[in-house]
Each structure stands twice: as structure tokens, then as C-alpha cells.
Amino acid sequence: MTQITLDKAQREAVVAKLKVYFEQELDQSIGQFDAEFLLDFFADTIGVYFYNKGLADARQLVGERLASIDDALYEIERPV
Image (cartoon, rainbow, N blue to C red; front, side, top):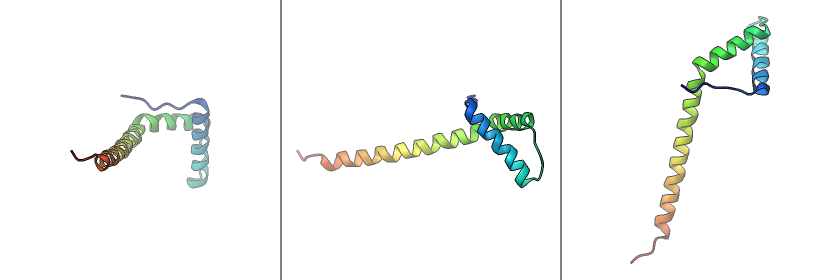
């Protein structure tokens, strides 16, 4: 299974957002280690669903574009 990985800057940004979320929405303070652990848990268990959804969306978009190109090619076809 492909694991979702973030570069250092992305990871730091998400961890910071998790900490702010816990503080503002749950009125709880969460430490750096706990936020990183939570991020790893989400990435390992939930990330694959978002990854697969992104692939499905891309597959649909590419299919629509290819159908459009196919239609355009039929439109310019000349009769024999």
C-alpha cells in the first residue's frame, strides 16, 4: 500500500493546524508529539481514502476530456 508522505514544510503546517483546531474547536491543548502522532494515524488510516478519491476524480476528468477529443475528431472527419 502506498503511504501518504508530506515534506517537512507540509508536515509542519498540518501539525500546526491540528494544534490550532484542538485549541479552538475542542478547547484542549495538544502537544507537538501528540499532533504529529495524530497526523501519522490519519495519514496511515484515512489518507488512502482521499488518495483513491483523487485518483477517481482524475480518472473521470481524463475520461471526459478524452470523450470530448474523440467527439471533436469525429466532427472533422471527412466523408469518403
